[in-house]
Length: 137
Image 1: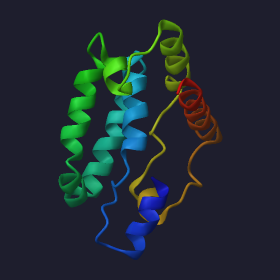
Image 2: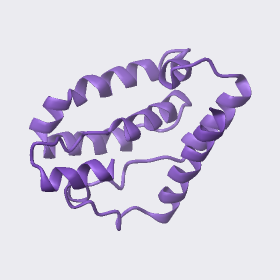
Image 3: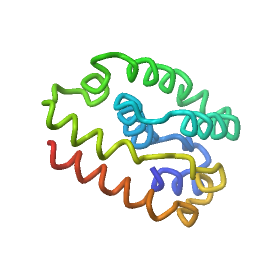
């Protein structure tokens, strides 16, 4: 996602939310695993408010609403991941997803491609999540 943000700086035609699925889907997995959602939703609302045209163009609100609804479904984890997963895989995925957060994300970070404000525990949590996803494939 940060690479697309950097491209957006040099080319204003690119949407700041390009590639945002790399953030939305893991967070939706967290929600499907009964992880907290209020802070994430508040952050997404802040980002949508900061970039309303980009959010509209990316249809971000629709995607966010759909992922929220799917995450509440009994089969939410399967629907979000896009494939059937075993109970053990679901447990691994949930264990890795629950610590994820986007509360650190600010409009300035998106525009400036600045990861300095990302807490180290979140950097670690995201890296661990992607490692688990890789191992499940």
